[in-house]
Length: 323
Ligand code: PBG
Image 1 (cartoon, rainbow, N blue to C red):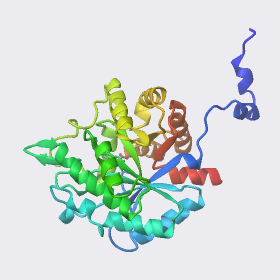
Image 2 (image 1 turned 90 degrees about the vertical axis):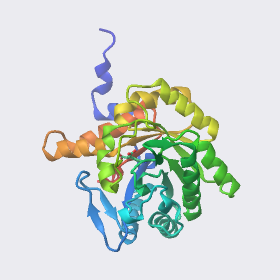
Image 3 (image 1 turned 60 degrees about the vertical axis):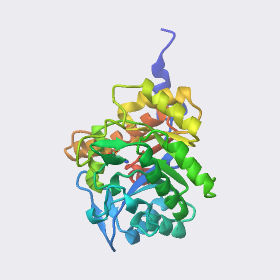
Image 4 (image 1 turned 90 degrees about the horizontal axis):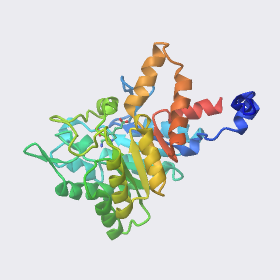
């Protein structure tokens, strides 16, 4: 045997030298959940370790993350049912919970980057990412709402707006609205390949945003498809996206790789709520080592070709690096 691959695995120093991929705090975006009120910190039962915060406690949480080096955040708001309607009007209220939270975060932490969520579902009485009429999700009418939402978020201090709705033409529409209003510096992270996934369950619990009727299969992608991801990515590039995203990440590593090999923009993988919950649930039962599973999942997303990872593990990973 003149070739012995084990030679390069024989000591930790050599293993570290030949390590091809690493994850650092600079690669991570931490999704955070916001609720109305004061001094609130309510754990999400299907996501152990993840809370919904009122704005005051959220600022403390962000301070703790910044101390760990986590400086990018993707906020999501949990809106009371009384404020939801067919047109998600609350989503572009300049004094709504979400826009207030963005302003407060930016005021207290000007150095952080905020990736705001553009989609109707947390504000929609139908629980859909578009306007529902006679059981159908209307595309072009929804774009109007998304444009208003993105503008309200830019005005409140979002660095990058992130449309997660999967309507056709939304990146181009949002780009135009932002530019017409002087926000040419605000970027767009497009959820390019977002699949109709069972792994969003805990997130929908967190925001009470599950569809009231039907499913999201007329706009989110079929998990069986990959070429379709290229079509979506090409459109997003043409329409002016600054970042592409694949979601979920772990069940779709091949899609991350496909976009990496065929496009030049930075790519983010969203390690979604259900992927987080599975690791936590198995670790609680002692069936897997939760910390090792976290590290393996995160580095796999980098190895597949992602530059950026959105993950509920971000803070825990920061704590792991500190110890
Ligand atoms: C909806 C949205 C979803 C997530 C982010 N934005 C859920 C959905 O499409 O129903 C899921 C994130 C996660 O599961 O962590 N606009």
